[in-house]
Amino acid sequence: MRIWVDADACPGDVKELLYRAADKRKVTMIFVANQPVRTPRSEYLSSICVPGGMNMADRHIVDQVEPGDLVITADIPLAAAVIDKGAEALEFRGELFTATSIGERLAARNLLDQLRGGGLITGGPAGYSSNDRQAFANQFDRWLTKKR
Image (cartoon, rainbow, N blue to C red; front, side, top):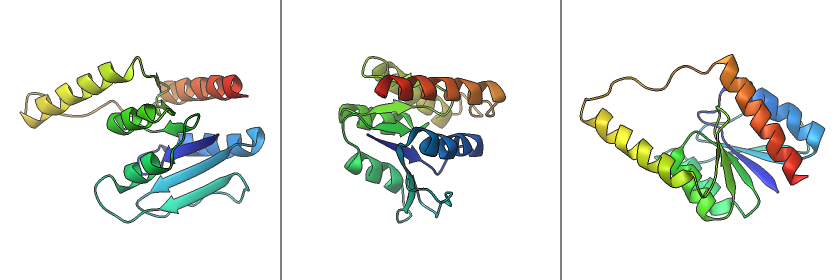
């Protein structure tokens, strides 16, 4: 079991939590980004810098992920792709995507994307809050406990 982190958009609070959890729980975590990601020295942490370009980090994760792995991302299409491969996906705000829920989330994301493209909706999601951080930490801990 490995944990893949879509590190380009990952909040710093989440990264810090993951760094601590890797050593405490002895679980391998790979941070994938378009630019170098510094991780603390640990046998359980590594980072991969992929070439720049649209969705290159996502493609790398999808190519490498295996059933039983977890991908941490806010990218709904990436979450859908890894779920199709038998992995699971956890959003930075604490939502665990499943084969059951991902279709609905992907449809909602596509609709909002169309509305934004048409100028009917402006702005994006609310800022990352302490409640979001706590929801992520709780869901991540539940996932790790279930897998062990």
